[in-house]
Amino acid sequence: TQLLEQSPQFLSIQEGENLTVYCNSSSVFSSLQWYRQEPGEGPVLLVTVVTGGEVKKLKRLTFQFGDARKDSSLHITAAQTGDTGLYLCAGARGATNKLIFGTGTLLAVQP
Amino acid sequence: GAGVSQSPSNKVTEKGKDVELRCDPISGHTALYWYRQSLGQGLEFLIYFQGNSAPDKSGLPSDRFSAERTGGSVSTLTIQRTQQEDSAVYLCASSLELGYGYTFGSGTRLTVV
Image (cartoon, rainbow over the protein chains, first blue to last red):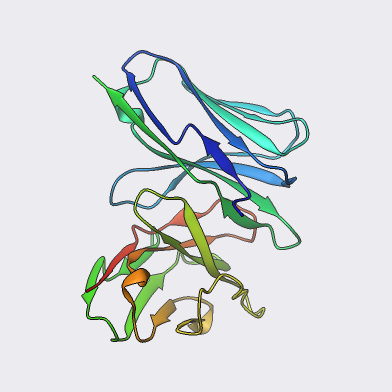
């Protein structure tokens, strides 16, 4: 059973378009992180959200943590080719705060 | 070091052979994690180490898999009698403490033929 489901699985858009990636679960997480992974590399941490309802902005990227801390979204404004990659959400839960990774969203931004 | 270092970056092995994968975490990071990633998929948790506590081995898929962390620093993931389904990218990460953001290495791509 996958605790964290991401949608869509694949997304191909043109440069300049906006997009939203969703990360959903029936479980509550103490915090949620978003990572981006490029081919041949490990995932790189983009942001950590901790409080229900929290919104964080990182240049053209906006991250939101759901009020109930069960879901999150990543919105990219005016996508660029450099945004291409695999986006992974990861939730921390339990006494150990071990991270559980989502299924991933593969984004391709075409020039 | 400045980042998490993994070696080798690529490993091709014959079915039935044993392999050892190495991870050198960021100095001072107390938590170290191993994950496995199949092509284009999310990450599957394998094991983590936190300081001197007993490791959480709950993600190891079979008793062919084992890991150790010596001196609270370098970790080795060992896969015995490799099978084709073990083929994947094995990623190591470290963090300052449990729950903090992870810094990942570039991974070891294991191919079992």
